[in-house]
Image 1: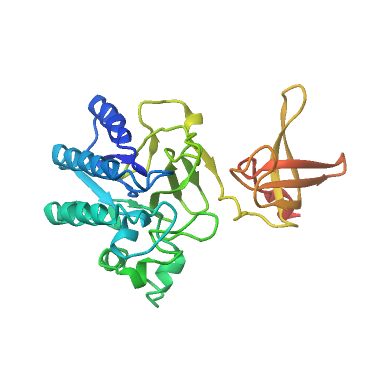
Image 2: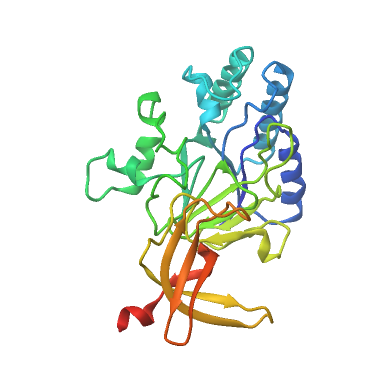
Length: 321
């Protein structure tokens, strides 16, 4: 099954318009929203925009009955009286009215977590900390998802829940499935290989309205777990890296191999040892951890600095010595 994914909306109904234009040009079996329809910078008093956003969502799911919606933390904050950034006292009644109306009229289309074949969709992802709440060595995945989908505030309003988890803070489960989440703004869709987590919140903005991401949509084959950017064949539209900033995959002293490009553009593989870990990237980039690698192989002794995590891997040669 080929699914089209629509990330966080945040009072920007034009995102749904843009998605529909692309959907009409392709062949998709399922459309999945990742929640957070409400709240945006400086829009707390714009009640008409809350109405407009939900009205647009309603028209879309009525026109595309193969749609599914996973709720986000901003959406549920209105039902659970939880104040957070962007929360609007003035818009609370409007948000609650629309959320309850849509769930009543299209009950099977809404949940916190949604699994199709080998892919799990949610606003923020399922973490190992969330699984640990079930106090079992082996958890039945579908039973757990069913339990999460009837979860209340006491269970779901947690930093490790599918409403709130961040890829730099938690380990995600299960890794034999591909998880797709929004919630964390990214410059382009990012696959964190360590957790098999694809983060696609590319439409968020800074406080001054500037876009954070490239405003691209992702599609995924739910059986093969293959994915790509809708309407694009440019492999640079998606970033693949080992782990998220703040969650480095390697530690000081690890033996690694790294591909080095010299001043003439020639590439070579160097084997060395992690000397410095910068968990939050460098001054040049903050999308992934970086490392200083000490290469001391008898032919050279050199510290290669600011190597992005995606450019290194565990060094087997050194481990075998």
